[in-house]
Image (tube, rainbow, N blue to C red; front, side, top):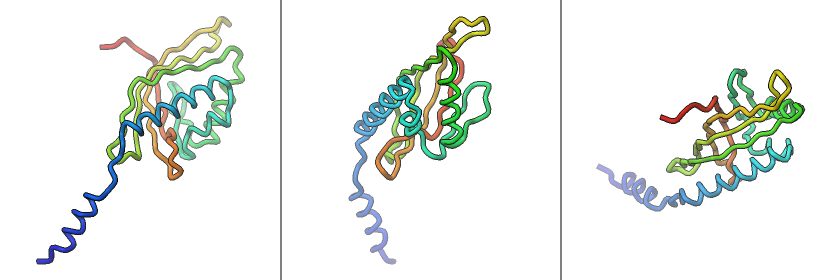
Length: 152
């Protein structure tokens, strides 16, 4: 029985660098804050850079927006609405042990004109799935939300 391959695998696993999950969580929080600032400033190109090329946005009552071109149009359409604004607060960030994926929970608010013309704020809750790119940046790959209900 050869033990060399097994010992090699064990040694390789032992030498694998440990991921600093707290540092990754902090990096996502920084990215999330910059993403929010870009969205609130109406900076489409900067906001778009926080989504991966293959990202999906799943908004209530809408077909999914798949890829940056569709997401760009979604952003442009939103910004064209008089009185439109967006805000969110990320409340929890969970990083996978590998340090390559994460997900976050939060709340959001979209302000848009109601049918009578007055501004109305639609409150939601959502989940964002993050993926760390080869360039070291965290980007959203799935952004999904629905109307916020009462807590249980």
